[in-house]
Amino acid sequence: MYSADDFAQAPAAPHPDLVRRLHEVVGDAGLVLDAEAQAPYLTDWLGKWRGRAALVVRPRDTAQTAAVVRICHESHTPIVVQGGNTGMSGGATPDASGAQVVLSLSRMTAIRAVDPINNTLTAEAGVLLANVQRSALEADRFFPLSLGSEGSCTIGGNLATNAGGIAVLRYGNTRDLVLGIEAVLPDGRVWNGLRALRKDNTGYDLRNLFIGSEGTLGIITAAVLKLFARPLGRATAWVGAASIESLVGLLADLRASAGERLVAFEMMSHDSLALVLQHVVDTRAPLEGAHAFHALVELADTRQDGLDELLESALGAALERGLANDVALSRSEAQSLAFWKIREGISQAQVRAGKAIKHDIALPISSLADFAHRAEAALRALRPAVRIVNFGHLGDGNLHYNVLVPADTTPAALAAETALLNRVVHDLVSHMGGSISAEHGVGQLRRDEMHHYKQPLELELMLRIKQALDPNQLMNPGKLL
Ligand code: FAD
Ligand code: 2HG
Ligand code: ZN
Image 1 (cartoon, rainbow, N blue to C red):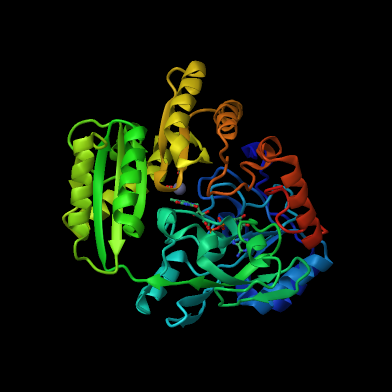
Image 2 (tube, helix red, strand yellow):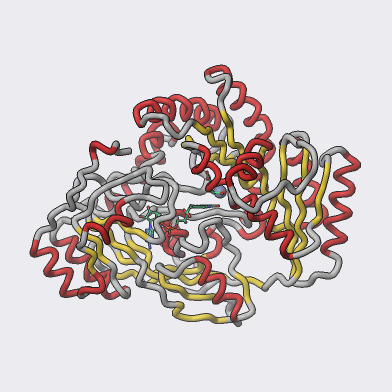
């Protein structure tokens, strides 16, 4: 993480020969040289990381991307790939050297094909996730990946981070939603793996190497995505509960009674809800009274019949068993949207309330309550007044167990506090068999911790793969490994 002092304001001076050669490939429209125009590419959406770039290149298609990468390969110029720049781990921000080229996929926005019989859609990497969803709906199909950032993140970024989101318990992570990819390798060759097959056992799964590799092995330029039946019925409810244990019990009951129709089970603590109500306009508490924890639950099906009744009777049983203390069933689309606005407002509320030390952890669902108790006890032993913002995708075992510190905390104090609290939370996660990065990736944020929490053998194998694909270390250096 750079401090403001490390960040020189003057733009880097790229080698004129590099500029000339790249200009020959992408033209005026594909080069961003001006310091002001470059600025948004040089920091992340939180302003947490800042860097400089030799220049920003925006190729229009795969051929241009390949030509740009070839030039960078020949001139030993490192590349930072960028999609929508909504990542949470600093993976898309260049370093402070000014030697790196930022390669933005933002002009590669074509939907190449939609095949409703094969249930597939082929999109270029720069297509916004919301546009992939829309194109699927236009073909009377459904693409289920859904994140708070879906209006700004790209499908290439989703693939590169193996993004999760709110429907993982039903449809899986991004990795589970892809059949094939096209990628430009670090030497500029194009691998066409755009197969639209649900069965293909012809050796190592190269596609899955690139998915989740955060721009360190190559550039994903297009993908064949899986489509699903379009859900026409939805039932949404807000649940107040006394504990995470109760919500985990409710989740198990709903999975048993609703099966595949349970598509989302999101959790937030009382403090997370309070933060949204205080900082996000047009939000109000869905339930009267104070509840220690809340869940936003959604069922969906290709037909509406019986869905409301199913949710109502399952939640009625939960109230009787004490798994829920109060319930609000959504009676309209507007009410469902109001519930989701609260859930999706937590990131924004944290930004407005201070600085968040973020933890994006995964554990077996059965361990989540125990983890939350132990983590809180350990944090409070060090910092009795600590502000914990505990929320996340309970349905798939992923908590955003964040800690808020005041906005005026100095960078040095924040760095020290982050190191201390990360160690407390991540040691516990590791001890309990969990992951320190469930869905946001490693980037710069977790890179140094990888040595502590990843098995040496796993790290060694990852380094060997990196060496095999990118021997000159030109793809996103300083990230992930
Ligand atoms: P970027 O931020 O541009 O890049 C992310 C990483 O991928 C970088 O390492 C970059 O180098 C690499 N990369 C980007 N494109 C390519 C490519 N074409 N080829 C190779 N490498 C590439 N994430 C979740 O998982 N779940 C959530 O619920 C979620 N909610 C969010 C809510 C908000 C409000 C915000 C701001 C973010 C949220 N995120 C969430 C994080 C973020 O949106 C995801 O990580 C997303 O997948 C990043 O996509 P992007 O296009 O913005 O990628
Ligand atoms: C979410 O689930 C995102 O809302 C963001 O993954 C989490 O702000 C965060 O820490
Ligand atoms: Zn999340």
